[in-house]
Image (cartoon, rainbow, N blue to C red):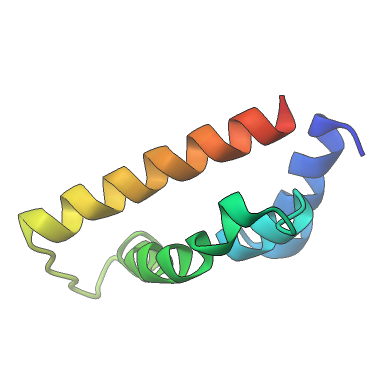
Length: 82
């Protein structure tokens, strides 16, 4: 599957589920195993964007951790699909 096809498949089927993206890119590699729990954690934060009437208060530490996870995932996925 080409990189474009991979991203299209993810967007079409997953509704932006990061866990599904990890599945698609081949998470048999050890480098991705520990990210499933992290992905579940930051996926909860998407509620605020999808449902603006809900209030989600995060500490500065939670925000920093979520950004760190997102950056790490981006780097791993970018390298894997390059």
